[in-house]
Image (cartoon, rainbow, N blue to C red; front, top):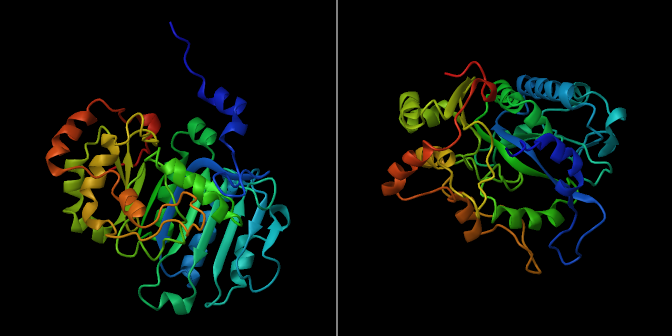
Length: 359
């Protein structure tokens, strides 16, 4: 009998192999720092970050995250802080709540907590939140505020429901407009541009990988969701637009999909674990295709550019490539029945892989 694969042992013994050197696929070439790290990433979009109530909710989210990730956090970056440096070692940083209280309504809410060994390095634990200023929030079309958090792959493997629980908790506190969570890359905050090319390359081989900057795409997702993933949050208006909760439950069988209520809508969990959807294996798993087709009506019709420009031919997801990425789980309507049949052979949920308060 084949010995069962020890996933945790593999990760611990090969940690260096899942830390991506900075600058890969750029003209400068590989640099001596960690530019990106695969992790579980959750992104949520919300409004009114200039108000006391929402700023308090942000602090509550970080306090929950900090209780779990404190031993991993190393640096805090801030953009345009009203006082103090833009970078400080995490142990020397004031509590977020104290810094938040020092912000005026028209100050930018900007906190990037990282876990890299050096300030310019990426690590698998990250909490970033960018909240629009008061005057921006009052202007329609400028985009949402965003929060993104990450957990190491090993931690999620060891605690199968930790990521889902935090995602739902954060969505509920923030009254999220929408969001998504699954496998992504945590890239260097201050050397992001140099590490987009490797993300672009990986996305062409791994359809389950989230790509792009959470806040950088906040204007593009005003018109609808960016993507489906292992977890997908949709608001009440979206639920009604696609036919209500009954239709969701009819189209997404409970053996494979779990629905979790939050303060402004529902979170859909697709299958027991996040999928890479590797192109050379199964780029279109039914657990992603079926919710994608159900939610097409509430998807943003156009994403524009996901990555920045490239002057020297570096891989980037822009223009048509960005639209193709948006539609990567689309299939012809007449193939839906085949994907429903395919679902029968895909991994099912269990009590150990879903939250107890599912609908």
